[in-house]
Length: 392
Image (cartoon, rainbow, N blue to C red; front, side, top):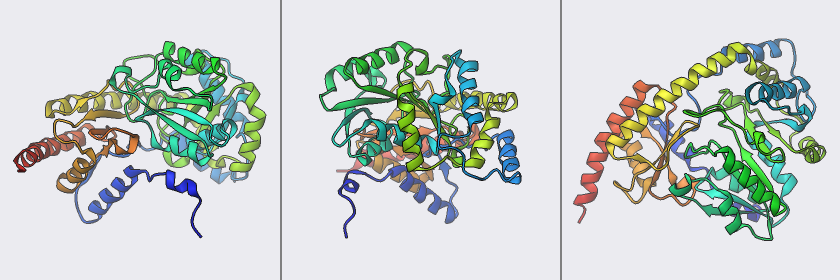
């Protein structure tokens, strides 16, 4: 029996194939430098680990309510109050199995068959596939350096149709690291609101910003849907825990969906996450954010020397989005050769949309390893360019 027809429209996540190839090289004895995976190299902060161990020791492993531990929802609300000066009713916060779980709830709430959701192209690929999962249509709006690869209100005006119900943006964004200004969020929310639609803002890299203040869309638009996560800034990727903040009108339906889609978020992870907001953990996270900033500056400078220049300034997350057009018109082939020849793993733009010459570098390695990667990359680029030029 064939699978459901929607599977034909859901492409593989190519970076996972690159990771598998890189791990195969490591198993064969090669020293691979991983700049492909969207995951910090830092371990989960010890206070969070200790809280998780304590939860297991105390047998805190039973189901929680579908929306999560009340004390964790209150702690997240406290985080918004402390960091942004916002008063968010904890009832509006739903804890989920990862940020992907949060996005699934929101799309299940908003999207009927053939409803359209506007997304930036290039952008995080799983988002458009989740829209398809709920029988909606992802409208991939081409964006470029002129808007820092971000979807803006002007795009809403051009691409919104009668079938559109929402727009989804990310700040900071993957793969670019670009951050939306509060004025841009205000305009986006207004553009969606005027058309009877909703704005979804992916803030899973919130906290990992550089040279600018920490911000949230909730500061300028209280009726947006916010997706956030304990994975990136809090460095709990494998714990699979995220959250959403929703308008009051949506809470009852979202809770009903949560009860049916995943019953409850993972209980030990929720107890562990209570420690994420402690002063001790926050000090660790701030030191690591500063370390990521050092890496960001180092890698940007080295890549520019090689001839791989950022397509837009990376103000957040832990990625650089660079154009390899000087060397190739096929970044996927370039990345495959780089891995095979020099054991440096990077992600081609193929994963993110119409970006055939683009590469994403994750600065999720210490500066010493970034230096080794750049040395290998510089050697590879010289050889690659000479080979390409010499082809008859």
